Length: 131
Image 1 (cartoon, rainbow, N blue to C red):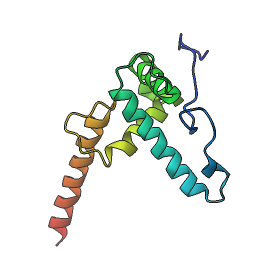
Image 2: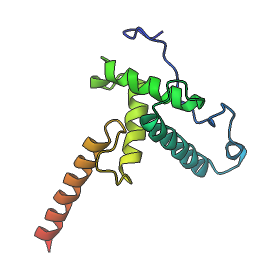
Image 3: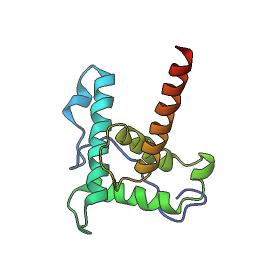
Image 4: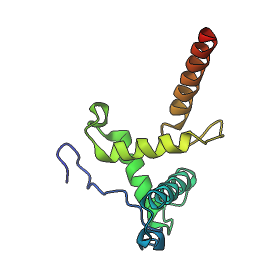
């Protein structure tokens, strides 16, 4: 148990839904392996946000739902001190870059998309002023 957290902490892993390590982790290209692992985690996060089965057989669904519940109650995320919150926010950022859903259920996604849009508008305004 982590100080300040009553619930048990669990690292979000890059394994398959059945808990096994994917075959591509044994390959030589670490960047591609990391990219594929992040994509799997994003798919698991999206699934968990849409899944209404309390007894879903997918282990990553249960893991992601625990992480989501954790971030809602975490007192340390505001100062960047919680690794679970950092991981979930990072996954949400990766997801938000390509998300087209108007009312996306992924935590932080709507806010992240809004910030991305504002930043793009600021960059466009700067480029207009320079030309």
